[in-house]
Length: 219
Image 1 (cartoon, rainbow, N blue to C red):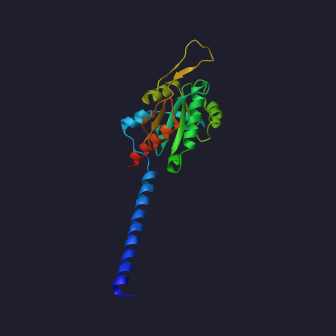
Image 2 (cartoon, rainbow, N blue to C red):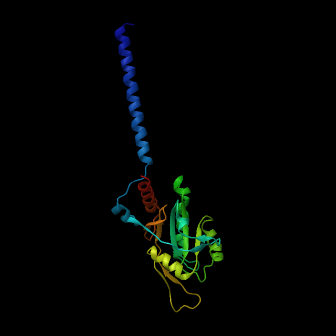
Image 3 (tube, rainbow, N blue to C red):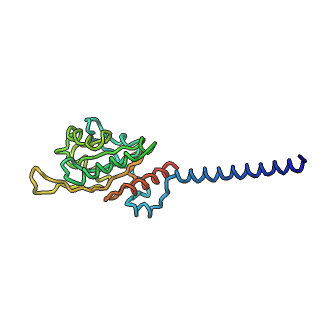
């Protein structure tokens, strides 16, 4: 075989190799981009029912107890994302529906998204929702969920700090109900009030919003 033909063969093989490498790079880049969360603007988040504070807000000091009877203060929010819902165990519809929804939400998360998130239900009815009552109630939804109770004024101050009003419905005797927000509050790993997911909650919209928020926080 002549030198010219050998050089021509090497040139063809080199060209083919370069093309194959280029194709692999393009495919790898495409797969990488597919795996990235969709970065959403504030306007897009709001369309999805997600509201993020321009500057996350410190909650301040508070002293409550969890469903195991252990102290629950600001330090319990540090180092992980937290979804906080204010409800009560005698709630006939909104609360069990929301707690079931939150179980579905966290169950569908994967990797670090699943490992560094907690769901906290803070009672708006501390007179009936003792730590023992919450301990009986929460496992119906998820064994990992945290229930929080305490003195009424302490809970009221905590709810106010998170823009989550509630009030006892008057004139119902011992079998009373409590009006409360059905939004879900988002607290970031620094323990700051980051935003909230507005009811009615939508699983797909909340997942893509949450992933966008996490990605922006980490980058």
